[in-house]
Image 1 (cartoon, rainbow, N blue to C red):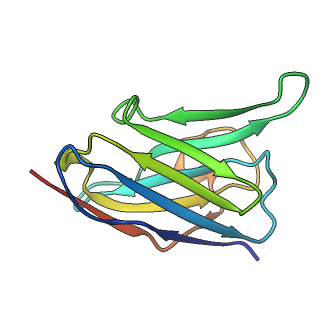
Image 2: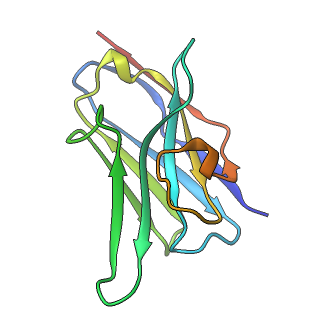
Length: 129
């Protein structure tokens, strides 16, 4: 059974930074998609960033970002401690939301919530102006 537990949320002023962590337990392949989503009050859950490992001759981590966070957020995954991270810089009040981590058993649609099979409970991020 796969379980995801987020941590690192909190309150910060605009322009500040936070690092979110997601501990992944259970069997999630290194080549599986793992991602961060967020949901603000009154809005639908939206993809923020995702990452998967591409095998083959050119092995590499392959991140995908929503346009709204490109250049400000960085997603990473440490397979040795089974943790995924989201470094968030230059935060704005529009980044205020409940942030979820998610993992997929297969597929290749990084920011599509329907792609994901497992979800954490969420961690709140609040950015004040």
